[in-house]
Length: 381
Image 1: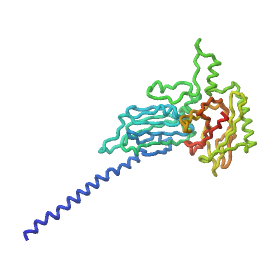
Image 2 (image 1 turned 180 degrees about the vertical axis):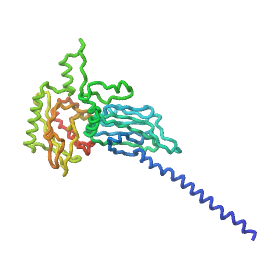
Image 3 (image 1 turned 60 degrees about the vertical axis):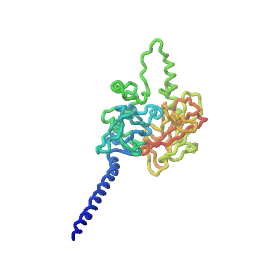
Image 4 (image 1 turned 60 degrees about the horizontal axis):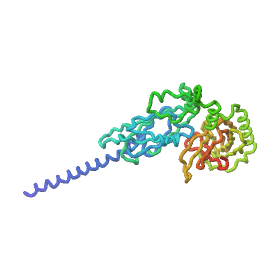
């Protein structure tokens, strides 16, 4: 009977062992709470619909990562206001190559919080104002895992709705247009030296000429070459040529051949008039709706641009071509199911390098970031 008390500690010893295992499990479960950060900010890849009530975008960024922010094809940044450069920087060289994307990189002081810190707060900010006038503020949250870094962020919004809302509120719109004071430098650049002006206004105010300044004819010739103004003082010749091209397109639709593959319901074909010696070139673009419902095209389309490619055909740079004038077969911007809209465009002929070509872009409002495109043939340069 004296041996029985010695067995009592044997029954007690397994209990601390089980309690110790439970504690280990609770510790191992704490990393599983990491996915909850996605409810506070985006991780991985983000596609964001920007609305009038929500213009703050929260993104995760890792110390050794970067974020590509893509914008709709018919809009782009006019001004970018970065925050502390030690926390986050905007890649200006990338912005020069692509005016419709913003690349943000972490600064040297942009580090993730300690593991025992539960609260997640943004560490850097960048504010961008688009040409339409839309202002979007990006907040960047530091994360340790590079896989959580938002490598690509696509912003979706209707440019026409943005312009309408701002115009109704008395705010400036179309910031690169003369109508909204685009020919004047804005006070933002002077007041905030750290802000960057993404692109110059389409037109610049001509100061009184000094005695040694270029003549008026030289200035006008340069403007015509750059495509900033129309090549003729009298636009009647341009308008007549475009309306004649539209009439021909409507009467002879079968002359449009070599249609592109359908991209989000849009197929393209073009006709370019031969070089007539005039200071402008006429291009007719046919846009067909291949869907069973009506589509609305983005404003100010089609867009003309010069695309530069490398030896392998990869795009390295894109810049827009200013259109002299455009005539359209349907001014509403809507294309009925199975129907075709025609655009006659006059533009200043471009001097192209071997690796450059003229490209046409047309997008519809439900896929503004993925336009249908068509390149002019080499012989048409």
